[in-house]
Amino acid sequence: MRRALNSSDAVHASGRSLSGTDLDGPGIARVGLLRLSDDGEAPARLLVLTDADPTAEFTGRQRTTLLTVRTLLDDAATTVLATEEHHRRWRDLEQSRQLAAERTLVDEHLDDAVTAVDCMSAIVRACSTLAGKTVLLFDRRGRTIAAATPDTAGHVAAPALTDILRAHSAGTATAPDPVVLAAGPTTGLTRRKILTPVIERGEHFGWLVIDEHPSPLSPTDEYAAARSARRIGAQFLVQRRIARVAWNARSSLTRQLVRGTGALDDLAAGGEYLGVNIHAQRVLVYVLASHHDLAHSERVLAEWMERDLGVEVLSTRGSEGILLLVEASENVGAVATVAKVKDALARAANALFRAQEFIAGVSSVSEPPALARAYREAREVVLCIDRFTGRSFHRILAVDDLGPARLFLAHGEISAVRHFVDDVLGPLLRGAPGTVDLLRTLQCWFDTARNVRGSAQRLGVHENTVRLRLARVHALTGLDVAGDASDQLSVQTALLVLRLQGHPVLDTHAGNGITAEADTEPEGAQPHDRAATGGGPAKERRPA
Image (tube, rainbow, N blue to C red):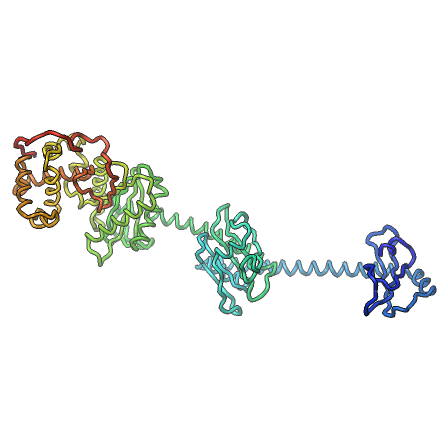
């Protein structure tokens, strides 16, 4: 061939192939080559003549004839090549026209799907119909949002998203372009897949996957995947805006319920539009958010509580914290409902605010007209916690945990409250022998509703021991906790302050959501907050 391209005469090969190897096997032939195009013309055209008879010889007459018709053959070859080029261009135009028609059909079907109620599922179904293949939509966590299979495909077992992403060399979404994943042992896929990240405005929402079944993949499938992913990404943004608007409307409704600023009938109409039962009994939770991002924490906390408790949770935020309205189940008692809410708050605090301060006050179960009062009570609980407990743990208490004493503790001067505690229980706080047992007995006495037998059982002592200890308290403090209601109120309030402060002798409200750290002394502790040596019986006094 090189000789023929460089020669104006015909070149003949005898007993050799074009590659230069000996033609000594079956099917050997004699070959003649003649350059038709002019020297240096591109493309170069060669005429190849073969004769199956290996003994045939090209005669001089044949050589002369070849040279004579060279121009005619060259013109014929040029015409054939031009015709082929014309046909090729016509085929390219026809393919382009057909591809444009297919893409127009794709866009029309997807535009119709966008108007459906179940928009994302409709887009996935349209994509499956257009491609004639199984299509799946995953969120970023690998959960299937929607899936569609053509009628001709039958049941197809789709692999998990983790297996598909493992075959993706990038592994993460960097651009919204479809990627064809090969099948084979290196990827672990039995069929090829088109993997398209759902990205809109730089935010990655999920993945769209087209499975190569029951027909092979085509360029139109890639286009359908890209256009479907783009529309799905836009729908994610639309749904987010709608959810934000609905959330703001629910937040406004929550604020009106707590403030009691709207007529109940008007609120009921707004609640019906938002799918909220205005007439349900609810527990109000006041969360002091001194170190939280309120805009983010409110929604995260409310959604966590909804998932944990399985009930509706409304939320709103103010300048000081977050308010939650937790729906009370009709088949659960009020006390049990409050306990469940406190437990859920404790789990949420440990999961969402592990490294942050978390203070929450929980109201009792309230009717809608009483939510304003529930707000004041829960806020008073939070003030008590914030004023008298340390800041190194999560603190969650209910209104019933503090009782009416919260009014005194929330609004009284801290120094006056501490002096009150010292006046009432000072003789028992100075580390004298036996005073530890006296404090524990007082706590059990009030925790068991002033029941001698219940206190004895809880302490593991005889009933007479409880009576003797109460008498000893009377002798040391001058307060008759066994028989005088006023003294009982004073002692119970003082014990409450000590428990809030995490006194080492008394049980804190750990069971109610407060988790204290060991050996932690409350900030600004006064002398009565810790044991000291010395001290003796106090004179008779009866605090007001």
